[in-house]
Length: 595
Image (cartoon, rainbow, N blue to C red; front, side, top):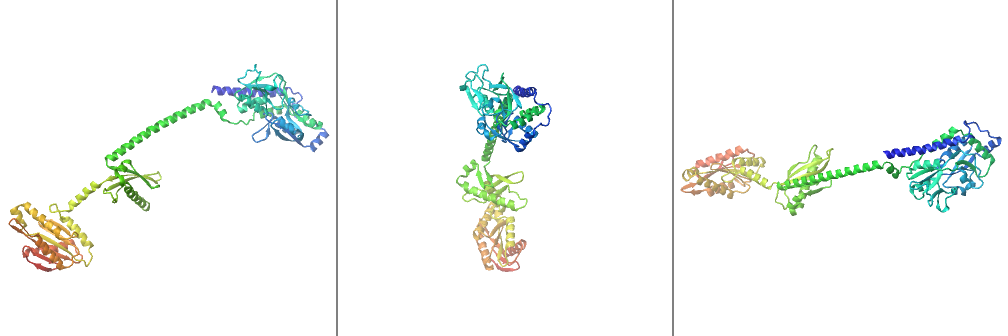
């Protein structure tokens, strides 16, 4: 902050010097009127202006604020504003032609009418110039690099403007020429030259505009420079017009022109200026940014470690729970498994991935076609070729805030053992616990299902088998012997009838068989006779035989109707004696047999 205040004070001092120089110039010019009056032009001068309204004015730029070229390529400065005042008073039109150096101007001097803003020190470079009365006076000051001692200039390089006079006492070998005052000052500021002279206006202007921080100025006791207009081919009428116009410019106008030109700067914002002015602030911001970056890196690394630890924890849990994690991207149609899954699946990984992708794709299609449908988060995968494991697929969709599906996280769970146990429980619930054939509830369900699906014209049969003298076996030989008799009958039934036939036990010593697609009543009768003969056995001193009652099922019947008909046939067979068979057509007895 102190440095910025100091620089601001230095800039204000320089600007104040420029203002004092302007005021002192006005105080030393008694010939300039205090108030503007109409020009007292002669008839010849009026005719001259009418016949020669265009004045080609040659200007050496690079001496701001006196005369320079702005960034748009237009001549600007005190001299340009003076010409505008003269033009307003006389009607002359000044066409300004800009040159970068006096050498360039001198090469084409004969093509112009006047040279603008030239002091006596430079007028000798162009023969035949006659100077007008001055419109601006400036003192000369010395500018030098801050490392140079103003009392020890011997051997130092002097920065001079091409075409100007070299001050006395400066060796020619120590002079380095530049096209403009600005270039000379830039060289001294950079240290490629050591010192130079210039008018106070230009030195102050370029110091402010370009931010020269390596320059210091030293006042000189030298003659003042007077800036004039100089007709190239001496013309008394043109000279008289110019002098009269200059004489009529009042002091207030001159001061206004000087202030306007000296405060109008095209300051170029460069990195060096920014760094020099805000160096402390920039360093502070840089330190803050570095600290923030370090904190960001620290928290990012810590968060990444926590995430990695969490991922490892999930992976371990998945391994312990026999789960296999995967990630699916619908847009890219890519499926990736965890390392545990890859190691566990081995060569089956490709086939498993194919089935998983097919299942997910089918779920996505259903989600698109069904309004309000979502991805099923639990499903059993279809059988996988070459893999004897059954998997449950559990998924969790990840969507954007707009509900757009981005990816799917899921896992496969081995449910082979669970399904096998469940299937065993279901099977156990359907079978008779003693004999292993179907129980009464399952028999009814399966027979009802068959009756509802059977077509007309298809001949089925329902047989009920009952053991004779079974109670005597239990009473004389015990229940174990009775159980063995029942198991033997069940084994005989399973060996005689087809796998498509429904074989079961109602309870006690009663069994039943539902036969599908019976060829004829005779076939059924013979089958019943075979059954009765095969189940006859001697247990201890007890002869165990069976009776069979059967019914043919032709038309649509209910389970109760079929059961009652077969039970009625069995009742008739039991009435006829042990080992008898009775077959009905649901209405009447078709045959009887005694054994």
